[in-house]
Amino acid sequence: MSLVELMNTNQGLPEKYKQMTTEEMENRIREIKAELGERLFIPGHHYQRDEVIQFADASGDSLQLAQISAKNSEADYVVFCGVHFMAETADILTDDRQVVVLPDMRAGCSMADMADINQTEKAWKALGSDFGDTILPLTYVNSTAAIKAFCGRNGGATVTSSNAKKMVQWAFTQKERILFLPDQHLGRNTAFDLGIPLEQMAVWDPIEEKLEYEGNIDDIKVILWKGHCSVHEKFTVENIRELRETDPEFQIIVHPECTHEVVQLSDDAGSTHYIIEKLKAAPANSKWAVGTEMNLVRRLGQVHTDKTVISLNPNMCPCLTMNRIDLPHLLWSLESIVEGKPVNQIKVDKDVAKDALLALERMLERV
Image (cartoon, rainbow, N blue to C red):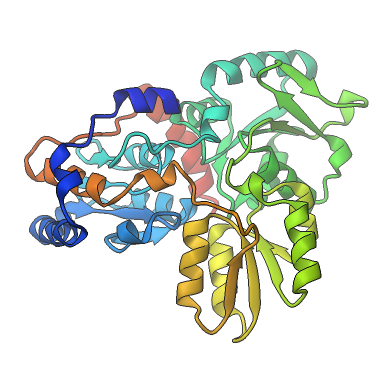
């Protein structure tokens, strides 16, 4: 479901929640959590606002939350504080009786929207004409359920930024080439780290419906979907150069959704979980410039007061769609559950869920 579709299907927030104070909303959320007890489970992604993450029963990155969702069987209601594709994954991995709710249906993902199923089916047909049955599809979990299902049907799997290397290595034991959706940067950085030269990577442009590559196509090992994260693409080579000149004591660590040039010029790169653990283990008084979502960077600075933690891009703003989840929407979703009329339920079509589960399970059994 695209961002436009999400916004069109979103029920408007009732006026009463706009009139409540922060204290009133927080107190009511605590009451509902106490009332529902184990019947309610609230997973929260690291990029969520502080006002929301304080109520999460578990916080983590995509891999952690996928694993927690797969193991969660006690809760009747899963109120997912993240974005749409994460709630879809939770619905796929949980039991049929469990209800998954996204507090605000506008919390989508621009990266996931960069690969829809119609584009992917067309690309698969065109690439099959050029390469035959030599390609295995892999999709970043930051993708729609339909794209996960496509990978499941075609022998592929999902990946996260934490396990992308392991999953790419596995893919090459299955087929000669891979198609990596929808984030070209994670695909490129992962493949490069595994020793595949840039000269053996091509880019599929879903808008122009063509392969971007100069050379003999028989040399291609990795086909990258032309998609990206609108947040991580905003960290630039110029950001790094300016920081190196003004304060060379800073160590620069970035997420692998950043461009290849930024990753190569940084001191380190890794998943959200990796970045969190790296800063936790860093010595006191060390300085860190972090290239990832601003809510997390700010929280890391608040937690590690013995270190200096800044954003690599001083003009960075939080992920706008992830930031859609706020106290009013969280409270609204919880009260609707108490009233027996859950709003904004996420329900993946059974046939789509069945194939998507194949892709997810191929990942989960290898991590």
